[in-house]
Amino acid sequence: MLPHASSFSLLLVTNKVLISLNRAVSIIPIGFNNPDFIKAFARSFVSFAISLDPGYKLNSSIITPLWDLYRPGNTEMVFNKTVDDSPDVHAVRTDGRLLDWCRFWESIGSITGQ
Image (cartoon, rainbow, N blue to C red; front, side):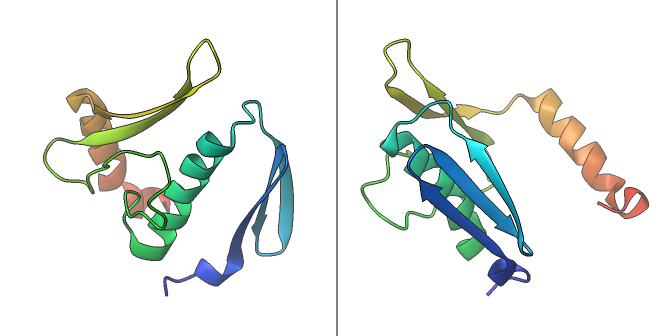
């Protein structure tokens, strides 16, 4: 188990997401109340917490497509919706300039305490 994994819980309740970190609870209204979208979005976090891989499928019915784990190709997942309120979840190639910016922040993490 990952450090702090037991101090995190995520509960989906009708049209709200309850997020609990170390006993502090936040209630966040969901602007797009589509069950498939909500499951795909929430499970990406849970998958990462369990396996350090956001593409790990806990359940084959989740609509999230293949999501490579920090490999060449540099994909990120877009969680969006169409104009007719259908889920639009797809992988895109991450812009190299954004990756450079991420590497910069990673390189100074020990200085900034991140």
